[in-house]
Amino acid sequence: MPVAQGQSSQGALNAAPGNSLPVLGDSARGDLSPVLERKLGEEIMFDVRRDRDFLDDAPILEYLNNFGNALAAAYPGARGETGNDFYFFCVRDPMLNAFALPGGFIGVHSALLLAAQNESELASVLSHEIGHVTQRHIARMIGQQKGDALMPLAAIILAALASKAGPDAAIGVFMGGQGLAIQRQIDFTRDAERESDRVGFQIMNAAGFDASGMVAFFQRMQAATKVYSDLTPPWLMSHPLTSERISDIRERIRAMPFRQRIDGLEFYLVRSRARVLQDESNQGRVEAQAAFDSQLKSQNRQQQAAGHYGLAYLAMKRGELAKAAEALARARATMKPASGAVFSTGQSASDGAAMFASLDLEIKLASGQPPALAAQTAKDAALAHDQFPLARGIARQYADALIANGQAEQAASYLREQVRQYREEPKLYDLLAKAYAAQGKLTLQHIALAESYVLAGAVPAAVDQLGIARKAPDASFYDLALIDARERELQTRQRDDKKEKKER
Ligand SMILES: [Zn+2]
Image (tube, rainbow, N blue to C red; front, side, top):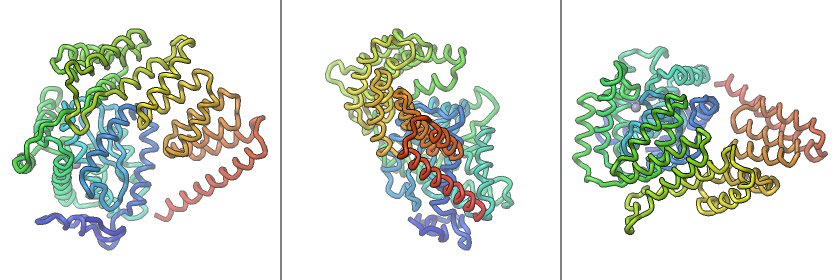
């Protein structure tokens, strides 16, 4: 399946037996190279991450990435010839939609996360979007553009995201206004969509999901449309449930063994968070509370636990910390196996322990807690970090707890080690800056902030921070040398970027 960079895209398509799809690339110009595609995606993500509707929530991001990457990993070749890592994220949006950006970045709207009733349903949409990436549909579309159209394209995608009108945004947008014959665009979409359905299906199968959830979910989305408005959910607008599509999917389901799969508790807990974060107005909170209250009446323990967890998170957001702690204790108690029953049959089934521990710390670190508790919280955080070393949110909470407990020096040395290990987490540098600030180390504080800006794609702001660091009274000779060297590096990078943009 892999196709060498810059060559015709025919190989990827013709690899499928009996495939009669048209050639989607231009062999003379070739696809957008994987490196350039990733770069374009990263540039778009810099802006997406700054958008206030980007759900910058550690447990949600961790869940989506564990879940989505497990899907992709189950299917050899999912990363296609690009070999790019996938990155999944959630956007606050009431429309049912999911979309793939260039470079393997896949976004899910909060409403879609809430509409999915189980992990198989979520998997059906994510697998389809992974299919678009795997088959390089976006890269092929961009590859057909003239070189100088590249940068405006990033802006077009952003505009589409901002307008929230972009159905399956990246794909949809590239279709319009680029001078391609309309008929051909429509044919192309249908083929690309069919191809993504096929790949998505294979992913679902390989990852052990019940693919019959696919049809049920799509049909429910369509039904919801009729009830609420005359607007078709964007995802269905770009993925219309034609009878052809349904029979295609049904045909594939028939060929597959039935699977029983137990969902991980995290799925339900993450939905509780998304429900709170989706609408933080008073009205939104009242509605979230009602939804959690009704979940408590469910016969399903996972639903009950998610209800208690949601009430705990909501109470914390309202500053009712004692109430939050109580509700969290109830959520945990709900999931304690009564008679040796454990939720561990499914591949991703789990007891939500890391998310419980993380919310526990969140409540303990919330403002309004008596300072006398800081020492105990730091101990709890160390314990949780030992227990769940891979939970990135807990790692940052641990650093935060150390700073709150006056152990800024220890926090700084821990964070310096963390930034070496996790090179793409701007928040680690923000915390490092906080740890330095707590020690009154101004130069180091601003150097750390500069690195945070670099990772967030804001190089000019980073250079500004280096300027402030240089003027700080505690700047040593060694610091100044370091600042100068870093500044030169960043300026060179800025120049190269500009040149590259002109060239392509
Ligand atoms: Zn699609």
